[in-house]
Length: 127
Image (cartoon, rainbow, N blue to C red; front, side, top):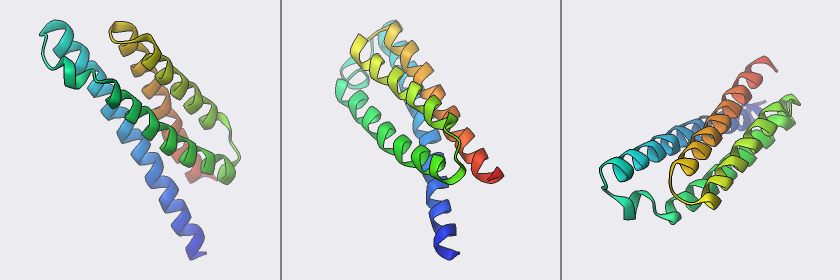
């Protein structure tokens, strides 16, 4: 019973981390567009492709682990599908290059990933 409780705690922390990472990604994206597009500041740092690749890699790892464990725990595949769609949108954002399309795809993607993690957390409570 203690092992099961510990695993549930880890999964919950991963879902919460996914929500925080999604929020940070959305803020970074919006601030990047505003600061670079309107003020012309920080383009080299804020729009660095490395930041986006690392963010996507973190989102993939956290999302696949926590949402995958969620499916195993409560049997609902909905959060995994929504999260997968969000991750796909985030990957598309990297492919389109910098600008408004990238920002829109990223914000939509991270919103779906965050929603998937929230749904996953709520499903744990009800399972």
